[in-house]
Image 1 (tube, rainbow, N blue to C red):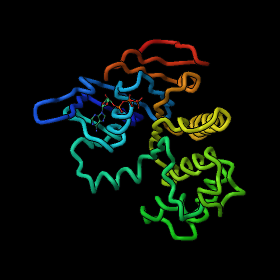
Image 2 (image 1 turned 60 degrees about the vertical axis):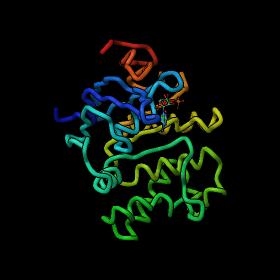
Image 3 (image 1 turned 180 degrees about the vertical axis):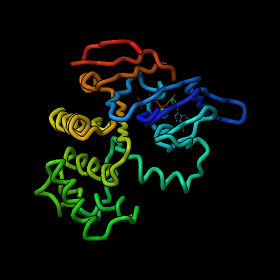
Length: 240
Ligand SMILES: Nc1ncnc2c1ncn2[C@@H]1O[C@H](COP(=O)(O)OP(=O)(O)OP(=O)(O)O)[C@@H](O)[C@H]1O
């Protein structure tokens, strides 16, 4: 399918807790995400949301099953190559921003572009500034993370995640550490990126309101999809 961006086929994830104790976190999960979707993933604590997101982003491997990203089977891709694919195709945003404290906003946003090595230093800097403009931090170019509020730090992290024009933006509780006003600004930013730029967004969240603002909500219980619904204005319009 031309516009399919992510496909998980019969994913199983087991953890070996000790030599003879194994825990199945995800028993058998299949899922398809189309380019341009805005998906929220919800579920009780420990239901496997982060594990699923990490498998989608190639940060974790399933015990069995297959993962396709942008048409490419990444199930057995070795870590060095996976790092390269991630840098190019995945933007990851965590609950804690993981900005580099000694670098300012422009330098932090520049980092994935410098690693990618496809733009000149001047182009990199210009693109970093444009991305900071887009997240409304045009007056904070030279601020270091400690000179930014929590919400501003997270917006720098989003600008950084967008640096290499990723196919998918993945967020693991990206507003979990923010007050409600800053969280709302971050939600609005995700919505705008999705609506105006067609950015595919997949976000794990505990926030009911945010979860229902997505176009599709997947609810996990014990590593299984309990419901997978298309939403319009927070209301399910059809079951998948
Ligand atoms: N490295 C690990 N070692 C042991 N158990 C783990 C490890 N990583 C995850 N788990 C277990 O796997 C299960 C799923 O964890 P996961 O973090 O994916 O859930 P979650 O739904 O994201 O939870 P939360 O909402 O609390 O972040 C949990 O029972 C967790 O305790």
